Each structure stands twice: as structure tokens, then as C-alpha cells.
Length: 406
Image 1 (cartoon, rainbow, N blue to C red):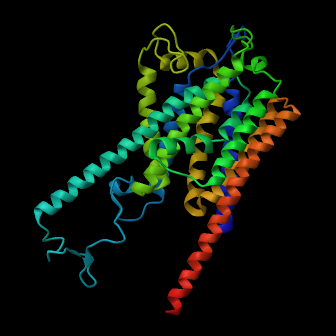
Image 2: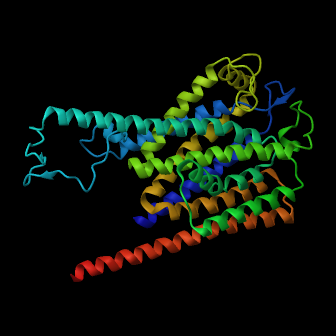
Image 3: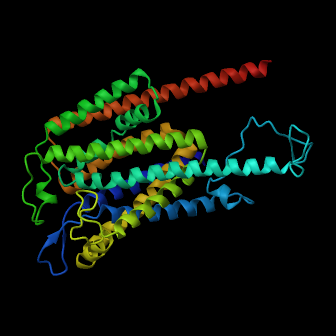
């Protein structure tokens, strides 16, 4: 059963995110109009975010209710009730489940002040948790447009390689936001990743102009296009790092499940994106590319009506992204982060190879060298993590043996 579940998780992550990557790259190039006289690029990153986050929140909610235990309240299912501490000061009275407090009162006889204090504490805890979820959603909503805009200036393989290096911004944001420190090997990994990306970007010859700027009226890319694309990608990675570091903080402090976090973050992302897309904001580079005071939501719907060929990759992007998240959280829950790192590392390698094969990208020998350096650095991280996990298991087994001998 364990082998079957692992195989289904691996196949699910690979299938969903490889299809998701193909759809994402397709959405970055022009679409023909109904009459075929011109082609235009789909620019609404907010609309993309609405589609994917809506399906992701629905998928997470269905998963939570499918896996629920009998008798669980809606607050417990959605992770809005603190989990009981294993070192609780309360105790049970015989075989009864009624708690007995230090002052001798049972749960039914507990003073009203103590009950009110507990409810107030739960309310404060819940507010802080939802605020953290909202913080993650704001970062994600702001990060998506920069990642989508970067594809107009750099090739998709470069984008995949950059997104493979989340360790760098995650480490930086953990240091800046939460004052965490890391072991020396992680700084070696960061250095290898940085060198690899620099080699890849510096030794490339292919320009995205042949695809992303074709028939869009934007002309050829400026000499600074590569720097602009890298700048957008760095902003995207920095915001992603803030998301991941905040998620680590939520997992460690609030003890929620991955599916609960997936539901709330995607729900807030949907609400934020709808609000931003519905407002008739002025033209804002990257964040609100629709000009003339028109809402981005209406501009996106107008684009879909005049360019119906965008519907299929848009649906593929949203659906595969939502299902892929479920497979990721299922892997994390049953097999841990080490297995997930291994799966996602190899998946990104196959994503790059698939992009090269499907869209005929040309990588120079120097770019392949840069790619090898990056994945070698990430492999060092996976190897050290595997070694640490093995040492921890050996230590736990020795402690159990000592306890049994006593």
C-alpha cells in the first residue's frame, strides 16, 4: 500500500506539473484572433491567479471533507481550533473524557471566567493564524505578475532554472524576517546556485523575441531586456521566499495541515485577485497592465471572446495547478519533505527538458554547464538532508532501545 501510494504521488506530481508547465509557457506567447488577422499576448496575470487559486481552494476543501473524521466540527476541519498540547496540565477522571482542572472543577463545572478566557484565547489564536494566511496570499498575489512578465524577456528554460533555486530567497527571507541561521553547507549550495544561474544567463544565445514578441507590436527586445527579465524573476523569487518562510513559521507555530493551509491561502488569493481585477485601476507596469482605466477582469474576458484558443491552455493551467498542489501536500504528509524535494528536483529537470523538446529551445554548452551546476547544488542539499534524517532515525532507535532495556 505504501509503495502504491508513493508511486501515485510521484506520477501525480510529474503528470500535473509537466502539463502545467506546458500550459504556462503556451500562455506566454501570442494567440490568434477569431478572424486570424492578428495575434496578441494574454497579459492578465491576475485573471490567471483567479482561475488557479479558485480551483485550488475548492480542491483543498473537497480533500479536507473527503478525509474528515466523524464528529469533527467545521472549525476543526478548517484548522481554526488549536490542537491540544501533548503536555497538557489537565487530566482525565478515570475512563471518562471529562477534564479535571487543577482547582478540582470538572469541565462541566469549570468556572465561567475560565471558559471565557479559553474562548478569548482561541479567538486571538485564530485571528493571528488568518492574518498569517493573508500575509502569504498578499505575497503570492504580488509575485505572480512578476513571474508572468519575466517570460516576455527571458526564455522559459531560464525561468524554470531560476524557479528551481527557491532555496536562495527562502534562506534570505528566513534570515531577514525571522532571524534564523543555517548550517554551513546551505551557504555552499546558495553559492553554487548563484554561479550556475550566472553562467546560464551569461552564456545563452536564444532570445524570447522570436516567440513572445511576434506580432504583438512590441518590436525587438531592447539590449537591457535580459536584465529586466532577471529583475522581474528576482522580485518573484524574493516574494516566493517570503511566502515559504512564512509558511514554515505557520507550520511550526500553529500545527495546521498542508491541506488546511492550501485552502485558506488560495481562498484569500482568490478574494484579493478578484478585488484587484474588478477595480478600474490606471495602468501600472506588471501589476495592472490594462490601460485606459478598464478593469482587468473585463479586459481578460474580452480577450477570451476575441481569442478563443486561449481557453484550453487556461483551463489546463488552472486544473493541473490545483491537482498538482494536492499531490504535493499528500506527498509531504505521508513521506516527508526529503521525498518531496527529490521528486520536485527531478520534476524541474524534466520540465526544462520537456520545454526544450516541445518548443524547440536551443541551449548552448555553457548553458548546460550552468544547469548542471545549479542541480548539483540542489543535489548537495538533498544529500545532506537525507544524511541528517538517517542520523536522526538511528538516534531515535538507540533511545528506544535504552528505554526498553530499563
